[in-house]
Amino acid sequence: MAAMIELIQDGSVTSARGFSAGATYAGLKTQENGVLDLGILASDVPANLAATFSTNKILSPSVVLSRERATRGTARGVVANSGCANCCVGEQGLTDAKELTELAASHVGVDAQDMLVCSTGMIGVELPMALLRQNVSNIRPTADGGHDFAKSIMTTDTRQKEIAVSVEIDGKMVTLGGAAKGVGMIHPNMATMLAFVTTDADVEQKFLQSALGKAVDSSFNMCSVDGDQSTNDTVLVFANGQAGGPVIEAGSTAAQAFQEALAYVCVSLAKDMVRDGEGAQKLIDVTVDGAQTLADARKAAREIASSSLVKAMVHGNDPNWGRIMMALGKSGAAMNESKIDIFVNDIQIVHDGVAIPYHNDVVVSAMAGSPEVRFRVSLNIGDATATGWGCDLTEEYVTFNSAYST
Image (tube, rainbow, N blue to C red):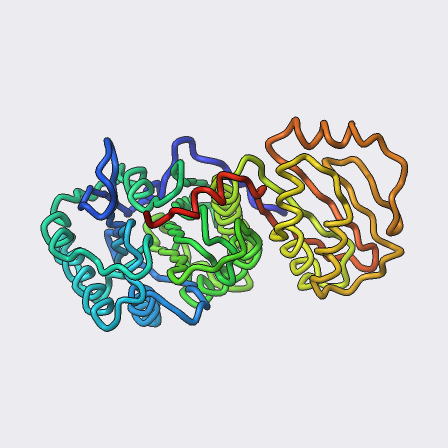
């Protein structure tokens, strides 16, 4: 039986019991009304921790430090900054990352080893430590501070990405909250962004790590904006057990319900990122079914969603299904061309690998009249299904990124 997951209105990363957050403006980004660029998220008690990080060979020292501390499996919180990636700055980057955790940990009264760090923004620029030392004490973490924290991690995002849900597990109502950022340099192999998930459920650490891996594979790893992978990717999940109830362990009914709720949160945040992709006007939703294996379904859906030609055709409301076939064919998934069916916003345009009669204007209208374009590709050689997400490629994306640093 599927878990009964309920969306919490105006929920945030501090909706789960025992979490607080806050943010301030520290001078890392251009000062504008309401801009925040430094935040802290903390648990009132030690929390079990699960984490995934970028697989890019060039990594921010902030990632290096957090990855090292995450091996302990517990943490009290994270300090995050936007406007500076703290990447490609030599040994100073690690020194600064450590000091930033020390400053944040001292401010909220926890051990520095229990504080992780995330940075996002321009590569090749050192953290302005003088500004951070001066301003970190301005952060006032509260149980209502999740919205400010979500705002403080934004770079080129146009809106905050937040969610909270409740689910009954073993007779206890538990909450999961989340915040994420990322609208460019998005083509995850883990996750090309920052994402933070909190829960007041008591989750055994090894199962929590396994659950996060599965959730990331079906959410953040299935979205693409521009085919580029960041140096600062981090997803963290904190479980502090403040809801009470028995420990959630692998193999139980409770584990299945928690897995579903965690996946729901991650998918929602992933889709929010793609909807807000730099210059994007449309979300692309790609479902591949009838694949021989889940791995094949995921490869195919991801390849289609990330194809520049497919993204350009969606921007132009052009039902050029040959581009979908092209992307499908290069995915490496097992397929038989003579069995492939393709649908655009539920209108079938290909059957058994060839075009069928359809009114082109109807398909164009269906694409143009919706902020979401759905492709369904049926391989018809198995029973595996996967969904991936992308966004259209617009002139605004090119214009924005042609002058990102100037």
